[in-house]
Image (cartoon, rainbow, N blue to C red; front, side, top):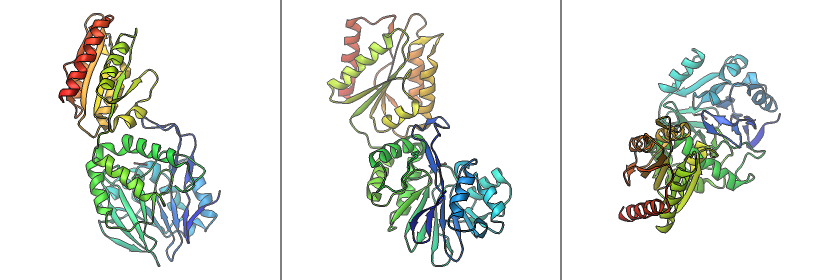
Length: 390
Ligand code: FEO
């Protein structure tokens, strides 16, 4: 396989994973890429590697440019195994290569995974000259692990951003000027919502740290490389970091005999009556990670579950667990559900949402067996009134 030339002496030498469909619970319907970059200078430098299992794809791309044994430096911007998995493999080939990682967490995490390979820790603002080029390292902790850093390379002014600005998006093209750009934005949003969202504050600090840099290209560790559309992806990140709301409302539910579903539609009507754009998701059909991507900018979230064996349905519990771990902003919530006897689920949903940075719009809404038209109309009216009052 061939390397892809990005600039003079600068190559993409990563791997394309067309088959990735799950990234620890995140449905990756478009696959992904593991981006590694090779810089040919006085000291030959490899930036990040690939996931274990893809090392030979990376190796063949490196071989299309140079003898891999000649690599002098490996920069590890992040120790998560989708980027560091092939470091021991490469160190075995490039035996004299020095491995640079973030001082503290980067060195600690790589040591935990692969043992002591003689890592060199670099601190904020530290530089590394490789000949005509110089790297400056900027820590970006929690974007997405404590060890993350980005590497800025002068004089080309390329930012190797690792997980930041990435997308789980396998494609034949490597550049934003060549790919299906709307798809890249969809996948960038889904990636932010499912990976970066809980660390919005830290991401904001990272954006501030990068604000003074003239960046000619952003080379993330997943997906396409940003060149022409840097202002657009930066603006999107700024809006996501700011936890801005739009005019959407999310209604998520599961249902047994369509009673909770009827309640979901009554709540949908209330949002419509208030000029909002509601989106309904039946958890029987929709994946948590897709809902999270839409829910990120919604001001309101309504979650409904029938009572099943004294509990909310497992699909709803799964969604709420995922939502609680990821949500980045303070939404208004509605908990609802039908029941036959017992009727615990709406209160359980309420409790989960109340401990997920969200604020209740109403007490939990419960209906026994099947809601009548009058009951559904009352739900719509009560929800609409509560929205207008908030
Ligand atoms: Fe793509 Fe946090 O690793």
